[in-house]
Amino acid sequence: MKKDLKHYVLTAMFMALACVATMSIRIPTPGTNGYIHPGDAIVILSGIFLGPVFGFLAGGIGSALADLFAGYMLYVPITFLIKGMGALMAGYIFQKLGSTTKGQHLSVILGGICNTILVVFGYFLYESMFYGMAGAAASMPANMVQGIGGLVIAIVLYPALHAIPHITD
Image (cartoon, helix red, strand yellow):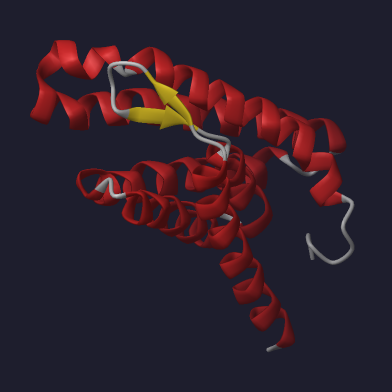
């Protein structure tokens, strides 16, 4: 029971971190009405530290809440799905490859790559329904920068978070 409570608390913490990291540093992207943010790093790390299911919930809900609070109502459902899936994939990869230190670092990288692909193509498909193919394509470069930025930040933060006692058991 104590371990379950800790897992729920960590999930809530990562959910809040995903929301705050998405909302705190926002670099506007010209012509898209969107912004680049470091929230994707927390999405990736949610899957790694919480596992696929709880990572999905933390990354998806935390990121969707950021869209809700920022007034991007149109994006709330797709953000929940895309960011949740990004965390789920990162968690799944970590479970399969993360038994060694080298595998753990490789998992962070591969999880970040999966997240970037989901962000770029997931939002492209969603936005193409509203803005057409050309309009949706305009946001792809910014989404690519956001995904790669999240990957780099996750690589930097992973060792620090992994060193925190009891976060991984």
